[in-house]
Length: 255
Image (tube, rainbow, N blue to C red; front, top):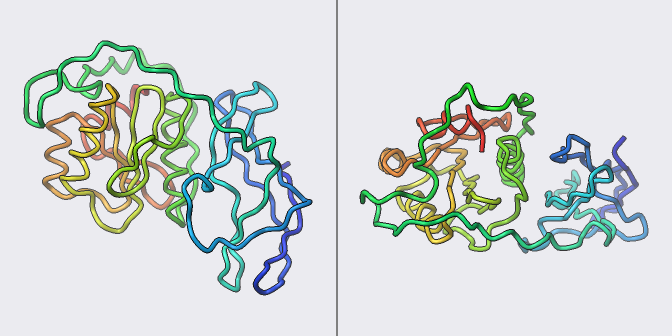
């Protein structure tokens, strides 16, 4: 059962009973942040990226993964950041460098081999069986990022973390061998968004994938098809829906 504790809003002094969320570890064990009952919840007045995530370690396998820092919305309108113990706030391990051979890149529309995303998809019959994806309902931008991270882990990507480089729009996620961009805005992703993601992934010799809540401009969709970038639309149930052939292949075969 998830850990819970009383939380008092510093703005209206209303008290809530907060239950820590559970997330699925790669080993299948549910994990939850360890709440700090000795500390007080604080109001979120501005967002700092490093404060948005917390490392939660699995008691079964010892693995540490980053998940959204626990928060609670008070009816008075204040967003409360729930305190967690220092034990789960250790920084994640540095990513293992990608040692795959790389090819000389070319500008979009060129003919040289692109980073990862244009490898021939594996036959569907060789894909290992996977459990059904368990989505999270999207109510906020944070939920969209969480849904994308869960989906990447379900595909088989490991060590998911925030990307080293912040994209021009949305949120960047990275894992071993892949760079993902999550756009939780109400505007369709643009051609520039797609090309910026491709160029960043190219410099890191990594595959790339795009998640959007509002879909894609026609130019963005066409360029992604040319570059072989999987495009997904996040519906409000938190389930990524493939919108092009590379996304269909990735969804079917996994990482």
